[in-house]
Image 1 (tube, rainbow, N blue to C red):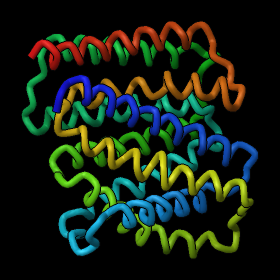
Image 2 (image 1 turned 180 degrees about the vertical axis):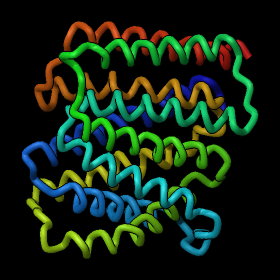
Image 3 (image 1 turned 45 degrees about the vertical axis):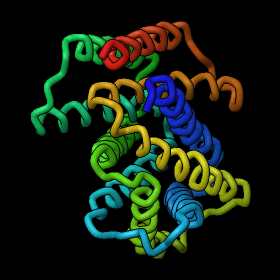
Length: 279
């Protein structure tokens, strides 16, 4: 696949990830729906959309996909609960910082060697992230931080599993189907406490079918063409897109410190991508 095509598809996937943060924040900030119900409807909608898109259902197999499904389920659950106390961009920053660390740790454990340019770019992007989080005025709630950190680790595992899975659409569809099964006991447990509003349900459906289901299938499609360093670094752009969407759609403020951090993050990502373009 040509570099320009990879870059374009990756950008679309990152915008889908940012859309997830906005949709989740919109649904849970009032709240229009409880986190567990949002997670289940999101997974169910994604599974339904992807199952429809898979031309031949017989080609789907669950064999060897349980790690993908478990990591997807845990990510969706922690993600939803974290956004009860985090802003859209704030949550995305924490999430993808954890993703970056998880991916780098996974790759090193498997013996991957990074170039100096990749390491420098990833370090610069991560430094921009830390620079935004460290000031006292920007510190997130402890519970929200911990939950989003767990979501990031789970998403990092889901991402790295996708690099070697093959058959992006089929793999993503199977993962969503299995994650729905994992979510059924949870739905039964919280059923008596569930709070549903039609607007919250609608946001969960859009998040599941479009920005999650289709977005994740697209992400699995481009993953084999990215190095581990690039896989981690490009996802650090998601908080930038989330902040822009948050400013436009839900009137979340964008501070000067965040703008500087965004510039540093994007610069670091550019450094990691230079390696591929030069190669």
